[in-house]
Image (cartoon, rainbow, N blue to C red; front, side, top):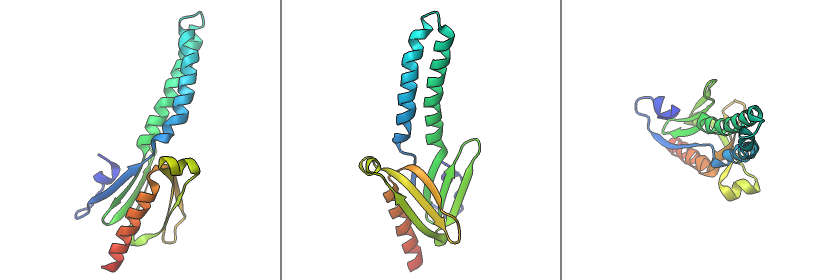
Length: 154
């Protein structure tokens, strides 16, 4: 169950949920594979200790990416926007829809091709909060803007 689902208030429903894109795994997997390719043969040689630590470091790189992916969540409910990052040390931001001042999306060329980018959320009078490597950032922005517009018309 996601952070947003656990923190819905009565009468509130979850409309859209997103998180980090799979791109966050690329560098840790490449580094982890490289370290593993060096470390695994060393396990069978006289340098067993070095091989063990390199293999352990490879697993740590990949494990970090898995934890990082689970640590970021962006959600839209019919009354609020939820932003959460971190597992052990968690930061959350919950904005009422009428307090959302702007949502920006920054995408590079690769991000546009693969569907990820940085989402920048600003609440009224607040500082902008940037969330890099978010999956389908333009869709999240569209969903929030649509819900804000619907609430303003009521």
